[in-house]
Length: 191
Image (tube, rainbow, N blue to C red; front, side, top):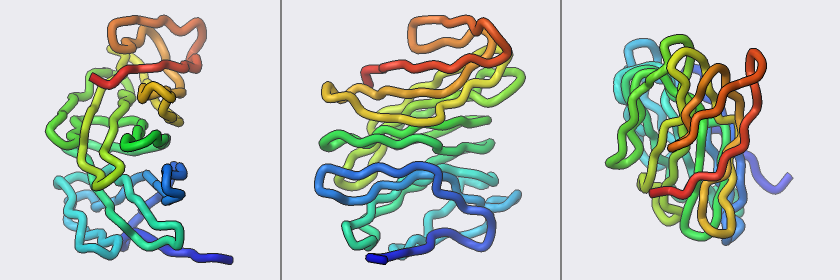
């Protein structure tokens, strides 16, 4: 074994996504559990990532080729947020997952729309420091939508896969599922 590291706090913290960066750095994303009152402190080794006051929030982290932490960022808001997919191309890291309530990445905030389940999202951060660079909601008015994986095209666009139900809005296009849940693949140019 070359290396192994554990990350998290006293509750349920999970890594769901993995990608390799252009300099062979390791990128990971998932969820941090701040507890029902948001009081837990989670430290990846560079100081605590303070929560926004709710239970689950997203993290994206960059590790060196030997597993040393270069940076870690937390993104969240009221409600629960999770990251399930991660991709990288050049100076851009794209990630996606699901959220309830609202989600803030850098200066971008989106609000939950569905009445009966989670909304999906796509976001991006800078490879150099993890600062937020873009965020977009994918949602259905009455059903659940979730991004399960993400990649970045050679043109720098986010490519996402996941599932949706009912009528779901993908940027300026609506899709209607033909069954209870259908899969999707979408390419979105970050604005």
